[in-house]
Image 1 (tube, rainbow, N blue to C red):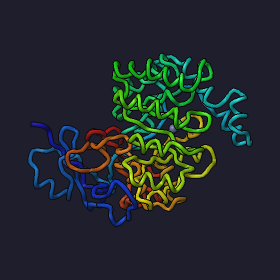
Image 2 (image 1 turned 120 degrees about the vertical axis):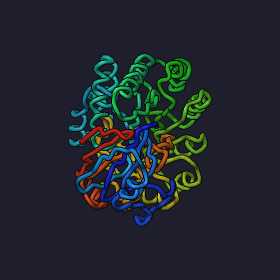
Image 3 (image 1 turned 180 degrees about the vertical axis):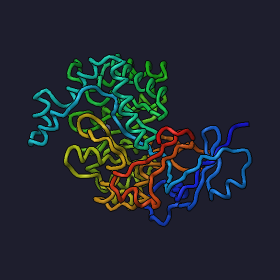
Image 4 (image 1 turned 90 degrees about the horizontal axis):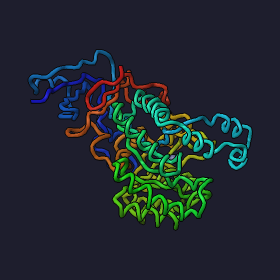
Length: 412
Ligand SMILES: [Zn+2]
């Protein structure tokens, strides 16, 4: 017989249940249980409801009593990060602030080439410890599931080193790290051959090795000027899909192409979308592809946000990722970025919170989390407040004071 525990009473329990996967959402659609409790067994939610009622309904349970005002909601899910890297791009940032363009920064020894050389040089242990530090920071801020991409070594040996670091940190930290192969980030400067030759090398050398070592089930590619074309990406992603990988695409950050290909190939998500146009918005609305917007990249580059309001009004789903990376998105604070995006794009609180919970889970193909509902993972966070609206009102400065992963407390 498994041990049952009841956590509560929460001033408000925000379950995120009963909200559709796609389209705009009104705050009145949020399920808020006052004086709420959660029954947990074996890391899974057994039942949510009124705390006193739950206590009278169950027998032989342990109570984890909440003594102060607290609003609980599902643990946040970050569906897009690049937090496995070595080095710093602070110098790039200072040059960007001084008005230098990306090509000028790259020419002066910065840009992604700098991160690639530092990540290639880092030992596996160094890389693991840098990744663990960032993933822990994320977890303590309430992000219980973190997608992490490779893509800063861009050769078979180095990409394996990155994916192994992600696997090892996943085994040692309570947070779930979901790894994605982004060897198709750009063609590395030292590769002799065309972009297609490089992608073929990944398909023939790297992807089979990833499958053999069970390092990832996801493949991502960057479609843009200076990265890969839509046609190059189609061939690559089709091969990856045939090998059994789930697909994600970096698309529509500066130029078009990623969204239509994501819909054509049935990718799980298409991420960025700063320059998406109406035609592609409508295409997404009629597909199962989850759009993931990355306000952290807009903040890091000082450019426009993806049109979140338009996407939602057109009937699209909408997930929000931090894009935490050393170049364009160094902040790494998902809640703060979500709050900032929300005020600029006029997203309701329900839409913003859905974007970092179950809609973000859907972008990763996960159906076992992101909602406080029976049968799902007991990943929860508690904010020290009596009103859920304080979470976004404080624009990210109010952090969870308690984080539970699979029903176990990882922070208080
Ligand atoms: Zn990215």
